[in-house]
Length: 66
Length: 143
Image (spheres, each protein chain N blue to C red):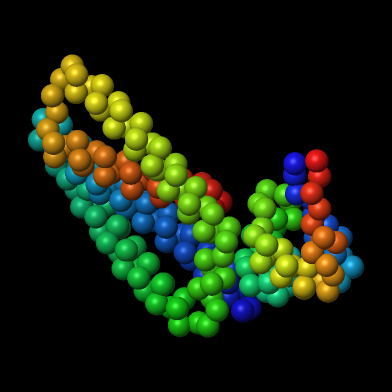
């Protein structure tokens, strides 16, 4: 079971850089980068903050793959 | 919090930890090694190297306190620089350090069966390894 995400797609839709998303969610750019690349699984709070930054539901950004 | 400021302080923090680790390994490493050296010239060189390491260690320790103060002075910066990934990396570094120290205790126990070693040197080696492995693994996880 792995957690996949569509951060890159949502960033492109919203015309946001990793730096800008990091600024909006209160983490470092490196954290956003590792989440986007699937190397780090964010907490529920951070996942919700990321979704909030894109104005979408959390399940639109993060999905579980069996 | 502006990301350029975050990046600047994150880099300073990282550099500070790297120099602090170098200082610790040089200073405390030579402090341990000096007891095993018989040659007076080599001993002198090791003591000198240890002193340089000590200066490097102390300078960076003070620098880290200063940096902590500067970070705390800027609203929200401390939380960003200590975000959940940094906390996770720190936890992993502690875990690695704990396992390495446990393994070293096991090895030293095995050595103690065949030869006796002083309590002080054993504690010094354990302290050196525990601190160094924690710092190095944090640098590794946080890269």
